[in-house]
Image (cartoon, rainbow, N blue to C red; front, side):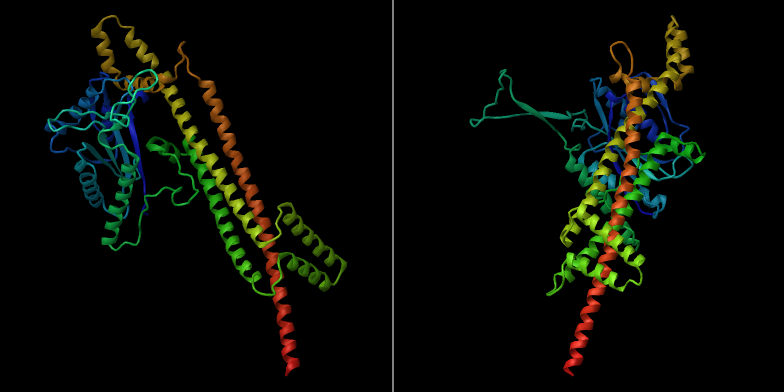
Length: 489
């Protein structure tokens, strides 16, 4: 099944991330970070099928070595919260072979990224137990490489000028300016163009191979689809779920899929009702046709007159009363009112989805922080034990023996650093309470979706009555016409 996934992100020091570690993960290699003084070893990672580094003509050839390249990137950035690299994850297509996917992706990277002067660390991850969905990773330094092979500036200052062309000053006497990107690589318009071009590249190959499938780069929102995207689970979560172990991300995705299924059903019913209303409106707008109130009255009188028993008349009266109550409570007196109310029900479903979307993003963020806390607690004793050695030789030996544990500790410590209070504590209780509150709120949306379904059932009941009324009205009209024609003969 063809699918579109193009995720863009940043590798930030402020989030506890390392460009060297990110490159090691994507390439499945063991790389040493000079900035952090630690190694990132992903040589046992499965699913890495192909890697390559693309350089623009002016880039030093030594950057073809992955460790050299990313240590150079780390060295060029001095700020402790520096943005280091752009990161892109792009889904490959199951309709194409691995070789076809790689050839297509390489063509796209060379023409869309390298041609702009970008360095691209390219990796292909293809299906195995740890990686069931084929995709590519692109890791690109944010700084451009100048013609002399040196790293350039990421931003430049633009000063505001007055009518005479002089630099403006603010109330404090300082020049008024703002920063702009020197490359435009991180601009929203550039990303939109790259997303669209990837869809175009893939669809051209589909067309060349006479495949009728296509992908669309537009988001659900831009395509007027209210479905919520699921969160990325990752190989570890998928493996646990496959063994029957429930995870927080798995539970969240199950909620999202359930809500999406409910929303699809709501949209389907609303579409059907609106199409029916459009047809009814055309009938009622014909000359000498009764309005909605006339049809309701005629329907009740016809049903009551044809009832054989008082029980039948009572049943008709009950149905009539229910329909009238629904229309009265919702201030529906015309077909236009009926349509407006159906659209209102659809808007309510969209509002509920917006709540879930915001909750989902925040829950994912909090769950990731809580996961970092567990890692931090687990490996903090190892870090303390290392620092307990007074002699450098013993400390370095311990560090080499516990390299993996210390890597996880440093990763968690960097990620959590912005959240520590002055007395060294983390707001764990507040995070957990917020997750619980958001989960309860998200679950309540399911109950509200049921209310929307209830409203749709009432609209469907009205539809049945109105259809029956129209049928009876048209039948009576035809009988009158036939009788009139017979008299003329």
